[in-house]
Image 1 (cartoon, rainbow over the protein chains, first blue to last red):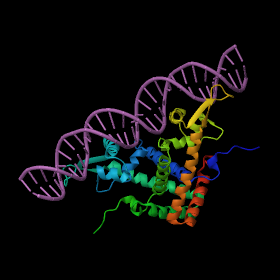
Image 2: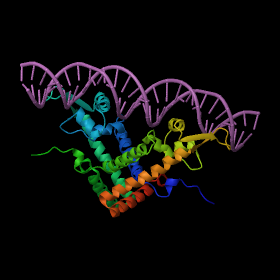
Image 3: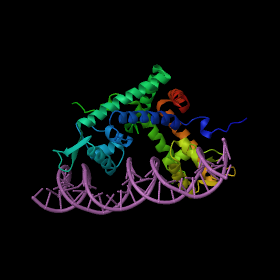
Image 4: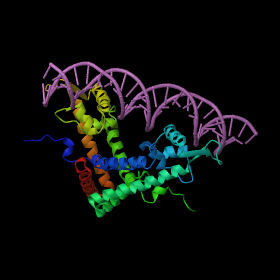
Length: 152
Length: 152
DNA sequence: CTAGTTTAGTCAGGCAATTTGACGAAAGGA
DNA sequence: TCCTTTCGTCAAATTGCCTGACTAAACTAG
């Protein structure tokens, strides 16, 4: 009996291999966030939390860092502000701009995000072993370094 | 002078490390697809191409494989059918169902997708070296194996 | 100091990629 | 033959973006 195989099953593309763990990690992290009392934080909001500085960031900075338009970022920031995670005050140094800050609740999200991310990583370590996970991480760090925008 | 650093810059989360190469790879692959004469294929369509079988698939199968609702999958399939990449004919074995097939043009996309994915992987290999990339791939394969749905 | 240009953000509109819910028609089992 | 499940569709809504047009403030050259 010949079982029909999906073409990509033979040798999985690197994209496939990167997407699977990333998707599971995201699911764990954002699912965990809901369980910790932040059910209104969605994955798209990560674009804000990943890039906001402790000293506050401007909308345009966030948009550029996240690789999206300022309108798109404004949409996310608006939602998070309305839900009490962010607040924006006028920038004293520039009358056109506003500085967007995490509220205390927003900082709690940041902390939860970091913790959940570590927990997920530890779970991965339990699956393939800490040593292999460490090697995987090192290789990914090297790849990221070479791929980072600065290196063209 | 102390340069302000983003908190996550210190030790990047595994999610960050997985997302960066994945995003760049996707960009290369789907950008390349446009350059090869398939400008109307978007990343979301990957959900179809990743899962469709050479012998054709049913809508429900595609939806389940892609982890989305059949309505969502129907939306993607509708677009690809209208653009000439897919065709669906009634399933002779089941009067309710249709079998969705790649057209010749759709097969050309599949081939381009595989080639572009390999090219992107080779480019990554040029960045960190073939040996390291091979180790990275092996580790990702092991992780994927452990994370795969069957293993809960 | 004024004139022109760039930059920060908003407003309005739209599309893509989903979701949920309700449904009709066919299939399969008892 | 009924009952239940499955396949797919219709309709509607939501989220997450984008493009274009615009105002206001700031910067840069005369």
